[in-house]
Amino acid sequence: MKQILFLIVISMMLSGCKKDSNDPLPEVAGIVGRWQLTEIEKTENGQKTWLSAVYYDQPTYLSFRNDGVLLDSKGLPLCCAPDFLNINGVPFKIVPKADLPVNPTCALIDCATCPTWNIQQTGDEIIIESCATFPRHKYVRK
Image (cartoon, rainbow, N blue to C red; front, side, top):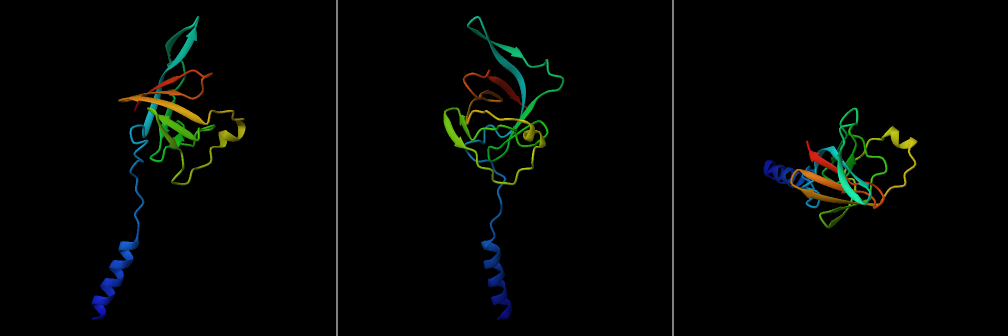
């Protein structure tokens, strides 16, 4: 009898445990992962063209975590990150679901960022528009 009671108590305790999920939130599932900057849009004489971003010494990467948090090439939180993403017209508020390490670079930066980034995703390519006055950036999934 004690064994049965013990099994019931243990099974109730175990069923009460909630496992943390690493599944991406549905709103950001399509963009979760690592992206490499490939092109930057330039406006010249009223014409918009895409210029290659290969002039950088090293590739520039941007990553989206399962909760929408943006990380830089080193896996640290992005300085001056937005509070909201607008992914293919669907708004999403970024709320970290796990602790973030401190990015020491951010202490040196005075942020004047856009609170919302517009992201257009087509397959393994995204175009990010952070502000109307900033150029758009094109990334491909890595």
